[in-house]
Length: 410
Image 1 (cartoon, rainbow, N blue to C red):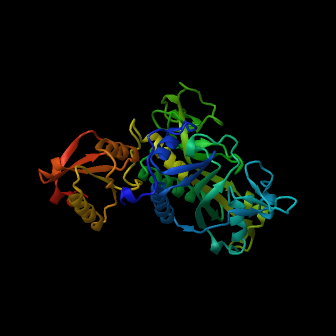
Image 2: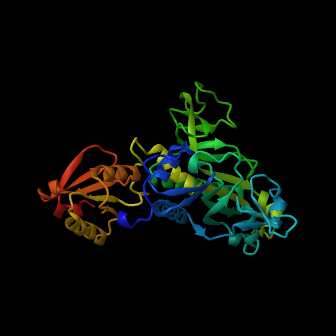
Image 3: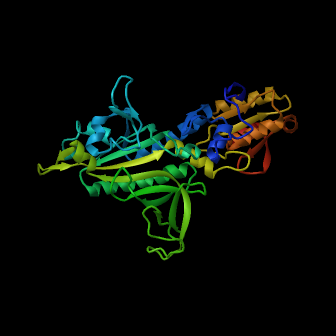
């Protein structure tokens, strides 16, 4: 991609109505556009990052047997009423102009919808277990839309649901999902902490969250500094300075960002929506269910919050919009174009700053702001040595690499 062809532009100043680092940097870098409070458009650079994150999620969820599908954003009242979740204030109700009252809600969760679908396909124990997921826009009536993409009214989410003959089988898959989540977050450059939490409007059982330590996090967790055991402050009886009952380590109070959660829903949705199966003995039983969520846009924002410096974003290579940010200086476009084309032919993702109306300082500043893992500079100074300058975004040092050797560095 040539920067001269990219329709978005970087901004020198952060927007005055955004206090969160993730929003400031993503807007300044041209990754997102703020439409309304808690509502953002993903621009070409931002959508490339989102695509990378979604691909990681798909690979790991597919690896544990998840089958991808896509459900409607409009959820009819008949699905939510049996579980007493229709009247919750979490949703945006949707009605036609001439309708007296709403008969639909903008989908904020899809347990009921998939359970209703499953009633058409699950009859016997032979049909279990199975797991299905989607990546879709969710809508939640968030009264405090703030912290940029960390707390939105409209956001991208991966929601996985698993169906089982009994709780033991559910717990086995729960562990598989847990390990898949750790792999997802690690591949996105994040260290997640498995945290005991409440169920909210999803289940009356204890649940688990995946928390990333950050001073801007809206959650408070109590974390054992020795074994890593953690509890959300909403349900915890632990205090800062306590001794961990598991290992004797010290408990510390920490701020954190929730990037994922998993729920044991029991038979709540099956009981209310008529999902059952006949076991080997011919006895009718309710299906056990679990739900597993990851906010895709929230995950992208978290990466920015924990991986940035005074100049801009530092993307992990796995989710960066491009691997290489190529800069041409001193009117050496012919040589830079050849390097650009050679790298692209080799399959390297390159963002090429070929702009004629920007100074070297402006190009370097934009490279730091956008945050690709590697910066390659082509200039008279480097070409006099038959080389280019190579710099990693997360390091200060630069090195000269011979032009003919550059392709071999990737």
